[in-house]
Structures are given as C-alpha cells and as structure tokens.
Image 1 (spheres, helix red, strand yellow):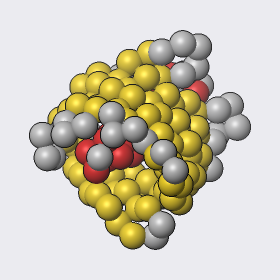
Image 2: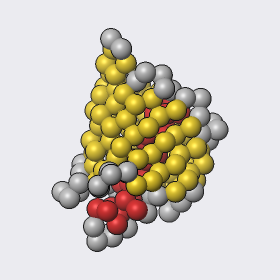
Image 3: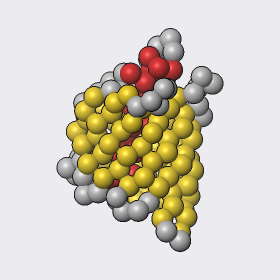
Image 4: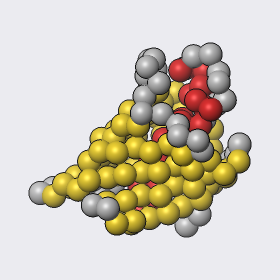
Length: 146
C-alpha cells in the first residue's frame, strides 16, 4: 500500500517538476516524465501518455496502482487513482513551491476515508523523494531515480 501511494507521489512529483523547467505548454511539461523510474523498496513506476492531456502511470511493488495525472492550463495539478488494496484517491496541487509539489485530498477504502497529503521533493533532475501522509501521520516515504 505504501509503495502504491509512493508511486502516486512519484508521478505527481514528476509531472510537477516539469513546471520548474519552464516548458511552453502543459503537454510539453508532462512529456518530460514519460518513461520508467526505479524506486526504493522494489517499486517501479512507468509513465506514458493516456488520453488527451492526461498521463497514465502504473506502479508495481508489493501492491499495484494506476493513476491519471494532469497539469491544467491554470498551472494546477490533478491526481486520481486506485490501488490493488481496494483504495482510491483524489488529490490536487496548486503548483510548485520551490522544489516541492504538494497534493492534498482524500484516500478512501470501503467504509473508510482519510485525509491524504503527498509531498514530492525534487532532489535532482532525475531523482525525487515522495512522502505520503494520512490523517496527518507519515505512512510512507520512497526515493526514485530515472
């Protein structure tokens, strides 16, 4: 579960990082993140074009997750997805604040809903750290490299 949330953070971070590169359009910014990422804890993340302006990512580790992420024309970000543990999330981010991109929203499973915060920190052009918090407590942290 932590790996899936971590993967979600990775993708959101990757997409957000493109804002800092000052590419001309949202689509061009997102294309930077296409490809494969290797993360700690045996997790991998594959990012590719989905439909329209949306990107699809798939994380594989202890559990699997799929998400759809998009940078809007106003500079904000949307991240929605589901994991093989039966959970799903819906988060948004207003944009980069220095080297961090923070998504906030909800993570839900059958009968339970929790606040969710995912923090992506850009450590280098090809490296990032993703932290996941539920109801204010950290539930996972993972580093990834391309």
